[in-house]
Image (cartoon, rainbow over all chains, first blue to last red; front, side, top):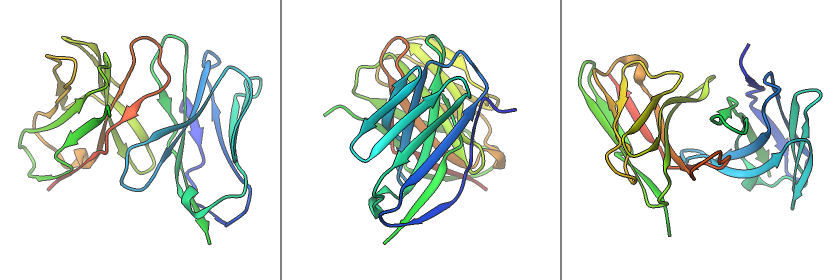
Length: 110
Length: 113
């Protein structure tokens, strides 16, 4: 079993839809939970991060962490064609390296 | 502005040749990382360094080596390129300590024929 699992998609939604992206993990020691966005032929960039459990909101993006279920989510409201990218979840303990999920490819159709 | 650059951006090489991919960062970060990205596998860590003269193996280090002689650069060498090493390679850096944020370069697309 991989430490971090993520549905690779591809996921295709119409413009304006609410998008839900999810990851599951196995290591209960993970404390930092991140979402990176990667546009085609570019390097990943940090989109959001959450420390421990709870929700965090930034504009149209909401990150949720449920440590009891070992499950994290990223919600995108009012999705735009510019949101079309691959979204990678990532996690780390307080002392170890970042572990990345395989990424979910998202297309938002105008 | 600080940045992280990689060169070349594209490289085609033959099986058995030695290849070096360059990574240069101006963030003054102590931590630097090399990943490869393949469909179905996501980002896999090859080697990493926490400072000058420090290098460590990641999960897919066989056939690769790195050396760190200064803060800014972490070149990745493929000792004898194999077709299985055809991939997109990303360099990243982060601040000292347990930083969760990594800054990635634009990537190098390597094809081994």
